Image 1 (tube, one colour):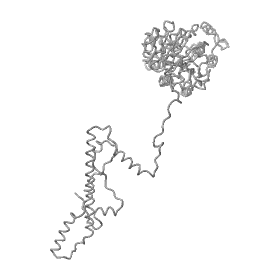
Image 2 (tube, helix red, strand yellow):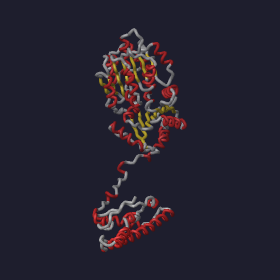
Image 3 (cartoon, rainbow, N blue to C red):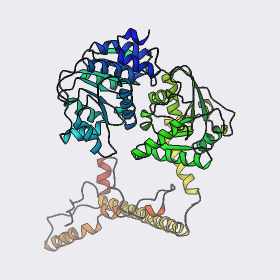
Image 4 (cartoon, helix red, strand yellow):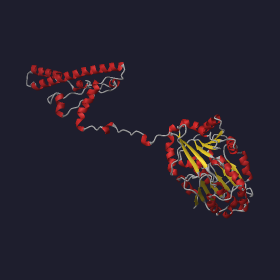
Length: 543
C-alpha cells in the first residue's frame, strides 16, 4: 500500500513525498482511514513508528476541506513536553506547506508574549503543553469553544508526569461535539480507563503487541556496580562504532554529572532535562542532531521530544523502574527500518527492575561478561546461604523438663562471671546480693517467731469474764497486751525484700524498685494460719 491509496489529497501527497515517505507505516495505514471518516481513535504503537503523521495528515485534510468564517482554534494537540510540542509543530508545518492551515506551539518555560501574539492573529491548529494552556485559558487568551478535533498524544507520559489533572481540566473546557484521538507508546490499564472517559466508540489500533520490544534492536546487558558505571560508560565510548549515543539517567543531577565526566574524558556530551532553560535544551538538542555533540544524556521526560532518524546506540545508564519505559527508551534507535543497539547497565540494586523488564519482554537480555568491571555481577539466588530456623524450632523443649531447665538456667546464671560490667556495676551487684542475703535471714527469723507465737496462742485458755474486778482488770490488761503477743502482721513480712533473681540482669535496673509483689497464699487455711488462726481478733486497718 502507498499513500495514494489512503485517500489523501494532492497537496498532502506532494508534501509527504518531499519528506521522503513512500510507504505508510502500519500505524499510519490503520489510523488514517478512520480519522478521515471522523471516528474517534485509540492508537497504541511503539515510538518511531510514525504516530505524528498518523494523526497530522488526516487532521490537515479535514480542516482544509471546510473553511469557517471565524479564526478560532479548530484542532488541539496536547503533549507532555516542550521538545515533543516543537517536533509536532514542525511536522504540521512540513505536511501542510501547500495548504492554508495555520498552526502554532505554546509551552511553559519561556515568555508568553510571542505565543499570545501568535494566538491573537488566529490559528487553526494549536500544539500545547497542559500547564501553559491552562494558564492562558485562565487569562482569557485561549478560546476552545469552536474546537473540532482533540488529540491527546503520549498519554502514558502524561500520567507519569502528573499531568492527568491538567488534562482533565482541559477536556472539561472542550465542546461536547468533537472528534477525539488518543495515542500512546504504551497501553497500561490506567490509560485504557482514561480513554473510556472521553472517547466515544473509538477504533482501536494496536500495531504491535503491548510493550513488545523491537526485534531488530541488538540488546546487551552489563552487570556493574553503581560506582563503576561512569568508568564503564567512558570505556564503551572508546569504540568508534558508537557514532552517537543517547544515554538515559534516572535523575537530573545524575544526567549533569554523567555529561560532565564524559567531557572531562574527551567525549563531547551534553545534558538535557527539565531544570535546563529552553534555550539550553534547544542548543543541546541541535548540537546532538548536527553531530557536534556525540553523546546526549537525558531523563525520560525530556527525551520524549527527541526525534533523530539515525541514532546508533541507546544506553540505559540507570534501568527504569517501569518496565514499559524500557521499551520506549530503546525504541529511540532502529527507526525507519534501520537496525540499532541498546546497552543497559545493571547494578545489584536494580535486579528487581531487570526482572520486571525481562518478564514484560518474555525473554532474557544477553549478558556481556568480558569487561573490566565484570566482578560486580549480582550473585545468583542459589548461592545465598539458607536462613536458619529459630533455636526454639530447631531444639524443641519438652514440657516435662520445665523445672529442671529453669533451675539449670538460674544456677548457670549465678555461677557465670559478670563479664562486660564496669567496676561500679560489680560493686552494686555484690552489695545487692549481700543485702538480699540479710533480708532472707530476717524473713526466716520472722517466720519462725510467727510460728512459735501462733503455737502458744493455740495452747493458752481463753480469759473468763466471771472473775472479780481485779481479774477483770487483769483480763482487760491481758486483752490490751494480746495484740503485742500476737504473731507479726503480714505487713512486716511484706516489707521484706524477696530473694533477688540470679540471672544476668543489669544491676542498675535491679536497684530501681524495691517494692515486692503482694504475698500470695495457696488456700484460705494457710491465710488464716499466717494471720493468727481462727481465734485471733479482727485487725483494725491502719489510718
